[in-house]
Image (cartoon, rainbow over all chains, first blue to last red; front, side):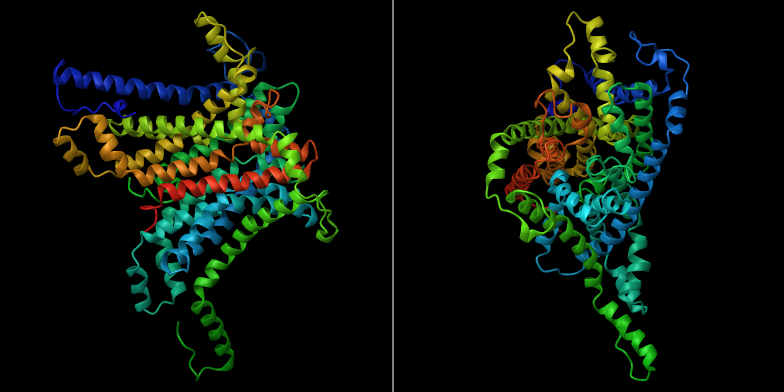
Length: 293
Length: 311
């Protein structure tokens, strides 16, 4: 594994002069990295190009590399009220869940960071354990309870499930962020006569804004790509967009062009979000262990 | 935490008391909603799964339930295919975790070695995280599109450019296909965390080992990786936990088939529940799975320790 990083400044030159070796190393390095770039990009290009090909050309083999892009598939897609509904559903349910999970998780993370909580370690592991529960094991009880409470196929129910996916993430990441904000900030505010709550609202929260922003977007992504909860807990009213795309795959004769268009439409907003938060992503995903860039 | 003054009128006194109640118990108010939701999403499902697994027919009236003893568990492991699905799941988790860690680390090391002035560095860094944006459902679409024996580009390229005949990926190599697709999807996760971890290794530490004349691989094995231990540990643990949750891509790709070749535990539970209507059997598998996953995660946490992860 280590040999892959051919450090340009490696010691000991026996069989090639320094300059040639450095050039060679650079070539190999970029060769590998460009190969992986191709592996990353080609499937995405293929999906997108499939969605932009006119119906007759979509499945043609050998593939028609040069084609006149058309938005035919997208128009077909948007004309289906089911797709528009599912997309709007997902946008609403996922956004609502993100707002709520931040409102619930951020204050709790603040307390975990600033106060001596009895058994703090256990509390944190307990929170992490909610991520260890496989969704399929969680969804089974909720299927019954949702039916009993009339929450089956409701947006409120789905929002609740999306909160359950992301709560541990928000608490862990935000605790790490608050740990990194010096306590003297609030103490200064307290000296100036602010209550603890005011200190939190006016001093700590603004300082933690980048963290809140990135954790919100990561939560959005995890909820946005979720399939299982939609599959089990909805039937018509609260169907998320993942389920709509899935129903395409499941159908007997697949309309490849439209399937590709729907799949692409699901990816695009997330790619934009990901690139926007790429700076904070590492801290977010590693629950705050890695903060430095 | 101001104390109410006696001179205030009773009305403002009431408000002040309310405010004090809010301020004095702030940590409790701040924690309460989180604890409430956590109890709901951890204890409740676990308890309900256990209850469902022990009864004959699901009923909301707990007192009317007929207890089935351990027969649901017995059915799960004899006719329910539970054992098979555990083996499949562990295979996928172990192979994908291994591939993603190694690949993620190699890519991170290669990218962080790109000359600083080079704009390629940020190009690679942003580009390499993109597959994470692909939802499992979309990934299944890509897989079906590109691997399809009739219209897929990959079998076509293999058939025309090489002397070999392309295998039928989804029916002959379903498990390998699932593992490789997951690797494509989630190597970025390992990459981005390892990349940040590598960047946080102090340059003085690397310089020192370089002066000592340590060869490259020794520098990694004895200096860099030990320094990054907490990062490696958390990345692997989180990815492992998430791999145990895998559902969407397999469901979209093969629905557990052909036969039961890709029947992960999550797929198995889903089928027992919604196709066979065997709620008790599904719950029994879920209970064993819960214990299994939490036990493994706890063993990993205890074994590797959490030093460096906590304050």
